[in-house]
Image (tube, rainbow, N blue to C red):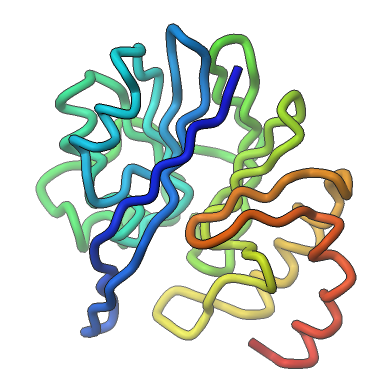
Length: 207
């Protein structure tokens, strides 16, 4: 089992604004099959990084357009299903009004690839349907935009809520082993142990 990392570039649009962004795309699997976490911006680059492996699923940590914009094209090229928590369908439909995800993610669900479970943790706050994927066997959690190196994801736009993301981080992420590597949706990785001491600072800052 290995985790491959690809950075793709494009835009994020919401609430009438558009911003340039770099996204982390995570590919988890072995030499035969893999799962893509967040098909961002460039389906051809993601397909090339798969290297001919069978794509089991395209898992979306949430419905913001920079995390799902390449998902339908990658699904069409590979036959893999796109999975999204249903609470983010309204965000998906803003970007892809003519198509729907192929399946729903739910808290406690396990997405299995090459015999390794990626456990779905529903972590609302950045968006209502945000999820993280915890892979105990790999000692890692894929946090999407819920937790970054240095603090929680943004909550200043539509469908976001700061107290909710703090609760998600406190109850669902900071309870993981301190050595758990946090592989984020943007920027550098961190660990649960590195972020846990700063929870009260984040709450005091209010954002």
